[in-house]
Length: 238
Image (cartoon, rainbow, N blue to C red; front, side):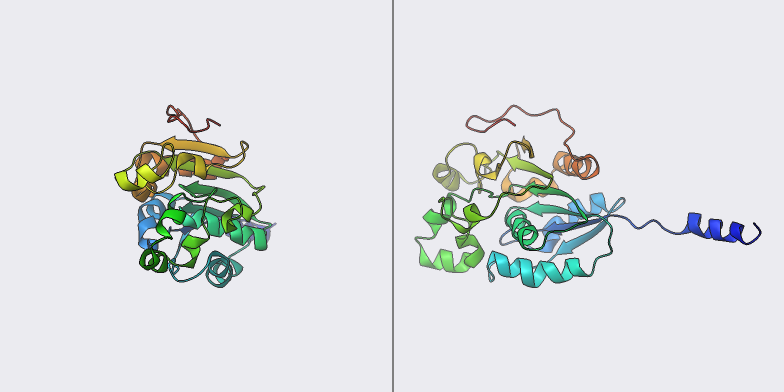
């Protein structure tokens, strides 16, 4: 008994290893765009902001060469993902190729899960398509596009879309409600996945206080804490 007491003291004073949250930015952004989200989650999770050259590599290469080495070195605690835009498709590609036994929750902010209507329009202009890079081309809205051939995920996902646009030109091209880059409809997948929309633009969705609060809640519980906003016209209500 005398020897057991120090052991019990040691066990109760050892730090409990937190779950890991991997944050992945979108096309043309940097890991710095995810700093507010990481700061808000860091009191409960170990946060890792992934940096990757979004305009220079295709999606499978990013998943394999950038994301996989990071995840390989993680402790065996639950691993969650919070993504913005293209980041959500990178996670889908990664988990399709490398299923995780310790996968936690996935929160996607404005993910082009059904592609983006901007891709065929902007791809007609060679300088723009060249600047945007190979991952952008893989996000076409056609049924045969790379993103639409990606298998549908079977793990828990919470999707938050935006419906505020600061870009009238792009919004004229995108059918239905949109955030200036992605339509609300294109973010959606199967009904079993949680879905919210917020009147926030694409570029600032990950900085919105309510989006951050909803993201934290989904990571902890697997569902959003909703008072759901009225669905914009043309969007499916899950």
